[in-house]
Image (cartoon, rainbow over all chains, first blue to last red; front, top):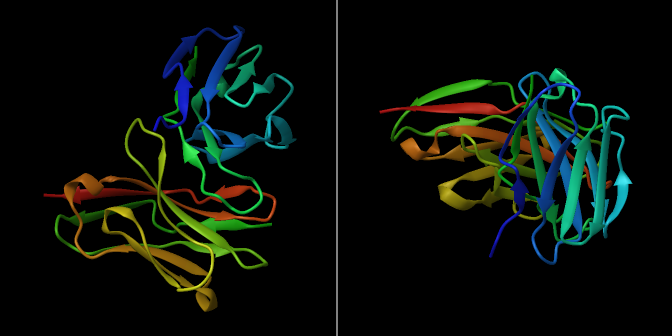
Length: 115
Length: 112
């Protein structure tokens, strides 16, 4: 079975540009999570969705960050405008259900570099 | 609020030696605990989980972990390390709000 699929794997862009990261969760999974990983702060949860509805976005750093999940098989994380401090690896994860502690399955991440 | 501490940032062991990675958590209720492994350039892969019951849980790749409530610990062990085990290991605790809180990670290096 296909796991969580993220694209692109790598993104290099100049500051001020819009960046869109994409995620396809595992089919049948109802919860989707976006994480950011940096050396300084480790793994941080940015936002998660349950049945395509954003449940908790308290980890989103600021208004420049937005996430959507238009359907059960696709989500985007957008940064506009991007800044060098946004450089990190962004992971998407999905799980079967949100309410009984189902393990999260992670994608391979998008390594983002903002110049 | 819940938190997870992995006291060792780096650990180096010889191939064939035993391994123990430490994890301490802080959580008010019964914790749901996980260990994940991250190989370079890859996402996180679930090694094992503890929800309830037997405090010694078996995972994939020959790993096991023991939940000790009195010590608020969930240490990961492997009797004999292989070179392919070199990676970063993350302990995580799961709360009722469906939020995973990760420790800072322990980078394992394996000497030949």
